[in-house]
Length: 427
Image (tube, rainbow, N blue to C red; front, side):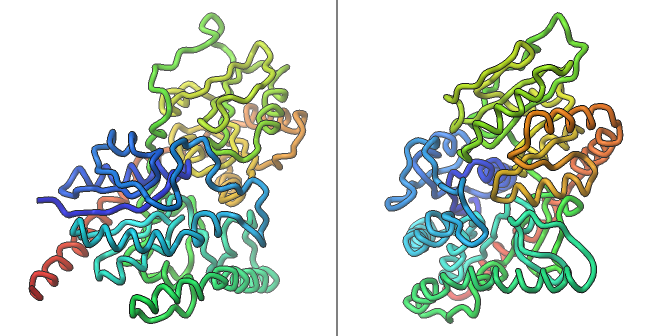
C-alpha cells in the first residue's frame, strides 16, 4: 500500500512541469498521488497517473488560457498575485486541504510555493509537509535582497544596508496578510504567527528545484532548505511531434529560438521586436508560443517561422541561441542543452534569473523595451563570442550530473514513515 500524498497547486505555467516531475519521482517509488487543483488541469493530472480533485471555490478555470495572475503590470509595492492567488483564497484552500487530508488519509502534504499558506493544513493535521519552490530562492537573507526585484548582489556597507532594508520591507509586506492567517490559525486552536514567513520556515522541507550553483542561497542556510536540482520536463500541453528543420536545404545558419512565457505577460511587442532583430541577420529564427499567446498575430520575414507549440526537448538540441523572458524553466532547459541566452525579463522571478545568467556568463540581460537594433547587437555578440557557449556547456554538465533528489527522497521517506509509526502508536 502506497504512502498517500496530496499535492496542492494551481496551473501557473512554469510551476507545473516541476510539480509533475516531482510527482513522477514519488510515484516511481511507493507514493500514491492526489492533486488538488483547477479543472483545467484534470486531463493532464490523469495523464500523469495521479488522482485529481477540483477546487469547489476559487481557482475554477476550465481554460488555462484565462489569465490567472493578472500581474503583467505588477509593481514592487503592489502585486496582484498576493490577492488573487497566494492569500486571497487562502482560507478556502486551507479548509479544503484539511478536508482531503481527513477523507483520503493523507500521509504527506506537498504545497506549491504559490499557495504556501496551505502549510497550515498540514500543521493542524500533524502530518509532514513539503514546500515546493519551482524557481530560485526569493526570500531575503543576511547576504541577499528579496527575490523578484531583479537586483544585483554587491559587497560593502551600502549593499548590506540595502539588503537589510529591503528584507524588512519584504517581511512587512507579507505581514499585511498575517492578521487574516492568524484568524484561521486561532479558529483551529493553533498558535498565531509572529511573521507570515514563519510558515515557510516551518515546513518540514522546502525544496528549491534548481541548481544551488545557479542560485544565490541564503547564508547561513535555513534548516529546512534543500536544493534538489532542476526538473527538465516539458509542459504537458507542448506538441510531441518530431521537430523538422524548416530550411532543410540550407542548414548552415545558426538557429535562434524566441521563447517567451506560456502565460500572459502582455509580451506581443517584445516578441515582435525580437523577430525584427533577426530579420537581416544570417540566422534562422523559430518563435515558440504557449497557450496564452498562440492566437497573436506577428509579422515574420522569410527567415522566421512561428510554432504554436513544440517541446523544447525536441527543438533545443538543434538551436544555437535562445531569446527568452527569463522564466526559470526555459533558462534551465536552455542550459541543459548548452545554449547561451538573451534574457528580456518581464516580471516575476525573471529579472533575478536573467542576472544569474549574466553571473554565469552564459548570456546577456536586456530590458524588455530594447529596440530591435539593441537585440540584434546582443545576438551578434553572443554568436561571435565562444565563451558564452562554453560556459553554457559547463552548466549543462552540472545539470546532467545532478543527483540532488535522491538524497532528499530518503529524508521524505523518513518523515513519512516516522509519522505513520507515531500515529499507529497512538491508536
